[in-house]
Image 1 (cartoon, rainbow, N blue to C red):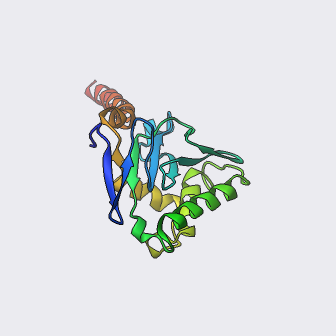
Image 2: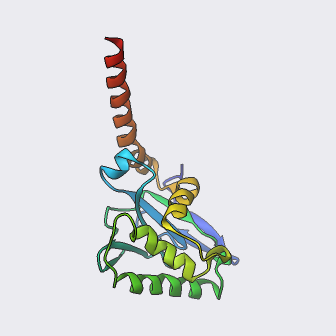
Length: 181
């Protein structure tokens, strides 16, 4: 789990600062739980992508891409990406892809199952050809964020996992109680 202190990320010999207090995560994908849905399936949540300056862009609903105001609250996890894996001229290509994906998603209806916040982030990664790929999608982003994402703090870890663990504990207790009678 990450410490509360800010983290410096080395890119091209310079450093980009993660600023948790102000929710600035340059070159990162950010994630936050969706009440009830994430309590049942904690690997499913709301996702956004940050510009080189750390400004969060997220597909928050039909025809709405918000900026620095994630639909379900501040990020609880982030996955820092490597700017060197962007095809093009580094931060300019990154920011253009995030901008272009956001402009495209401002014209789309939101669909929870098929065209959602994960799809918006995937579109940005496909536009920048991140890791020389154009096959990013909501499923592999969900999995990659689960594997590579880091919690912002201990509190964010609890916000992500505690409801699931409590529900699971209650269910196990209920099942054991029924089976012991």
